[in-house]
Length: 293
Image (cartoon, rainbow, N blue to C red):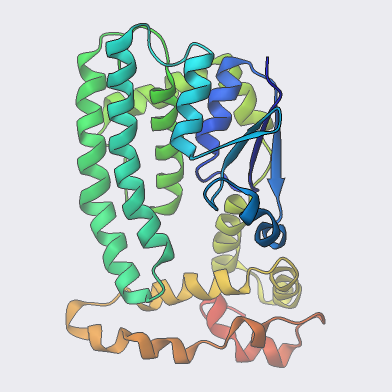
């Protein structure tokens, strides 16, 4: 058997889907999580200048969907016949098309356009895509996408919905009862349950927790809080979180949320320092915690 090495950042992102496949297939691999600062030197060495990459005995395979299908087909998670294999691929491709829109949203720099994209995704695109998947699961008496056992398609649905629910808090699973059951079935698979219990903490979770803490932080601890987010380099993340809140306006007030709104936020370099932030600096940047310092 080849010696597998999956290379990605310390994020779930496009790689978590593949990690779930490795877990369910009970295949050993090296889960290499590179630092962001190491990416520029690694990028020219990858097949398409993107991650994740799967390395096998010195050979590299790029593209998250290709990697997922390759591992699934090699280890019995791609369907029991040719039709099931093609059917699963069609579902995964539909989800991949949705993720293109999500990626565009994540990389949008104009905060107000970003809010428009967020609303469209939460209210339409995500529901449309998974509404179709809901019907497929409902039609299968075994509760999977297709067939009588879990496949990489089910794991892809799980990985995607897990992250979408974190990124889009207004998206609800309430109208997808069959998909909700599928998620529980996936979590109940012994190998998946072990992975979910033991998997490393990622930057996604750190950012999410900071958003929660920032909204409730006690004044007495605010100096230490800002020192922490300076050290881990997430001041910019806190800025974006609060800019999103400032863009939550009625349509009649949209002119107050133009590109010029960025002028109200100091640059990340202005807020970051090797020294612990002073009370004066914290007061100056009160907006980061919504005025709760």
